[in-house]
Amino acid sequence: PHLFDALDDQPLDAMLTLLHLLRNDPRSDKIDLGIGVYGDDNGCTPVMQAAKMAERNLIETQTSKAYLAAEGDAHFINLLAQRVLGGAEVNRYCGVQTPGGTGALRLAAELIHKANPEARVWLGTPTWINHHALIRSAGLHILEHPFFDQATQSVLFDEMMTALESARTGDVVLLHACCHNPTGADFTPAQWRTIGELVNRKGLIPLIDIAYQGLGHGMEADAAAMRTLLDSVPEAIIAASCSKNFGLYRERIGALWVKADSATAALRARGNLILIARAMWSMPPDHGAAVVRTILDSTDLTQIWLTELEQMRTRLNSMRAELAKAVPQLASVAQQSGMFALLPLNREAVADLRVKHGIYMVENGRMNIAGLQAGNLPRFAAALKPYLQ
Ligand code: PLP
Image 1 (tube, protein in one colour):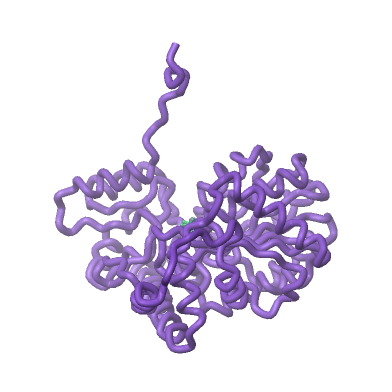
Image 2 (cartoon, rainbow, N blue to C red):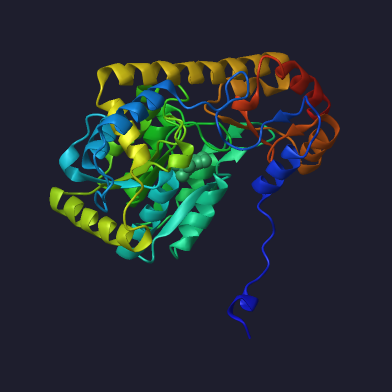
């Protein structure tokens, strides 16, 4: 027998299937609301000006591409920590650079498994689909708690809290810091406080995924609730991505921080993160981190980047407001934040919209708000209406 004969066939990834259908759709007015990438009002995902300027600077000044270190570029990590964690007690944190937010989550899962193989990870339903695979790959057990009701577009907070009452000490709760994927629904400050109380009372570890900071209400506002929670708990893990807010998707850049109960424990966690990272990717890619470092190290570039980020955020929020205005049943979309909404549509409706109208969304009803443009929003709203109550 041959080795690879033992493998099972795998169905084509739903997102790739969608992309394939989209590319082969000849209709010139097709609307792409599928993959989670920011698009401007012309449907382009341009390289941010601040990133271009940083790249020019790097070409001129970079003298070597020798390996950096398994933990990545310490200066990048420190500069990004100020943006993500704010003025946290840094000596209780350790941070490492990772290949994207995905790398940060995968590394987090491995660290949790190494520290406590019995730990179970609680995921809200629904959550980013890849959370399941990333956590499971490390051998951790997943439990789900209710999070969002698609029909009523509401956060199922009481149901979530009730479910988490059965969590065990040492279990991990994954929380989206802001701009929830796929629902766009975030917790209120009061709900974050309630989560903090539960986490402390039951001895749970928050694993916070922050992949869209700056795309909801601003870099500081989007991190505020997370930072308050972090200040109130002895231990936590934070997985950050620079893919969306720096537009550096394919450069694969993110970071992972662990907050430990003491400086000594933080150092120990760091040693373990480096060991695990060595066995997964050895060294993280540098280019994206060097771009982010160059931006954050310069007041001018930081200002240019923040202005561009604000334009992206403003565009997303204005598309939300326009959609809510055009489709009163989707009024809640204007209250949600970030790149996504999970519309109250079943699979048949999503397929129908694609076949009849050339409108492409993920089969669960997730739409990318950034796929909307002044020019296509009216047609989208009109096509949607028959499918909504
Ligand atoms: N977390 C969430 C919720 C996401 O939606 C994504 C990307 O889609 C990521 C993490 C990871 O992003 P990346 O690995 O591209 O940085």
